[in-house]
Structures are given as C-alpha cells and as structure tokens.
Length: 289
Image (cartoon, rainbow, N blue to C red; front, top):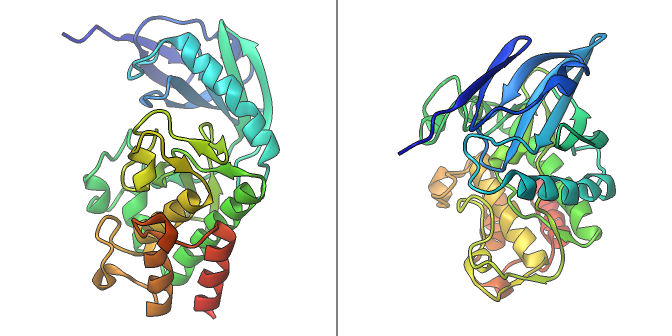
C-alpha cells in the first residue's frame, strides 16, 4: 500500500514529497521556477532566478517521493560528490558554484544550463522516448549527423580528462547528458557516483542503466578500471548514433570505420576493448578523418 504524498508549492512550482520539509531557505535565494522531484537518488532539484541570473540547486535531506533510502544517506552521498565536481572541472561539465549545509540537509548550487537531459524520465519514460516527437532523445536523434558527432566529442573529451585524473564513470547514461537545442552545446551533469580507479566491484550490480553498463559492472569482485570507461563510451556512441541496445551495423548512422571503433569498445571481453579512453578517442578521431 503506497503512502500518501505531501504537496508543496514554492513560487511558481508545485511538487510532491513523502513528508513535509522546510524550504524557506530556497525562496530566500530567489524565485523558484522549476522543480525536478521524481529522481530516485534522494535528491530534489530546483531552478531558481534572482536579478536575472538563473541557478540549479540540488538538495539532499528531504524525504523525496521515489527514494528508498534514508534522507541522511542521500546527504552523505551529495557531500561525497562535491570534490568530484571540483577535481573534474571541465568545459563540458556543469560548473559547481557553491555548496553548504541548510534546512537539515545539504545543497549544491550549479550553473543553470539551457539544455534538456536526453533521458527525461520524469516527462518521457521509456520506451516513449524513442517515438514521442516531443522527447529530447527523439529530437536529438533527428539532428544532422555532424551535430551528434560533435556532442559525442564533448562526451569523449570530458571522459578522457576523467581518466587522466584516475577516475571511472559510474552511473553515466543518457540522463547525464544535457543538450541545448538552440546553441547546440552539450554538458555533462550528475557525476556524483564517479570513483577513483582501479576499484573492485563490491556491490554485484553497480549503480547505472544497464543499457550503458559493462559486464564487470554486474560482477561481484570484478575490477573496474579504464576498460570499463571504454565500454561506457562505446555504449554512448551506440545510443546517440546507433540502435542503442541493437548494436548492429544496420542501425549505425555513421561510417563503417567509426562503427568498428565503437564495436571494439563494447566488446564483452575486457581484453578485446581499447586499453583506455585515450586510445579509444585517438582511434575514433582517426576514423573520423
């Protein structure tokens, strides 16, 4: 039996929580014009505006509607994520402006980016994202190939930098990709679970979307390292310019040379993949030329 939800209104938006929670501190920061309340991470996020400047506020500590854990666990997860945004700063990563304890929880304040996530699960749940002409993913798939290749380049260059700083992408999927359809700019968000490498899988199934995860991300005791990153990048390529789970050449939109690079990246056998994202990215760029 589901528990009744508590509705709360702040300025221009109404959202639902599992129980009431104070948000007066948020309205003191500006006018709330957007809310994202259906994530299962334990976070609730808001768009706020003050003096013509928009910001994105991610908050942990409230009893959100879809989170199965305790609010204090979500708080600790967000606090642990802060150094990631500081250490992995990049032109293609959403920029962190501030972070602080507030309202019995923790808030992280980011730049506001006029983009849409390619997996907007709160508006377009799968499988409608493939057929609904209003979904960001569907609209992205209609873009010219050169636009999609440019977006992939942003993703690959960021993750090459991630690798250089000895991290691996965990829980990176199309919901972590923001695309501005007006300016044709790509940004990465939600890197909260990225980890230093190498590390050993102590969970069995790690966090993430199975559409993008390597075999070792399902295997207890498996090594998670640079080759795991390579698989993730290949899976992203198949998502944005291929058939996603259908990794056949028939669904591939680009050249055969690029297909061969992506197919090698998603090899189920680790040793058959590129040894690093840097090597994958070099091969990708060579295939583009």
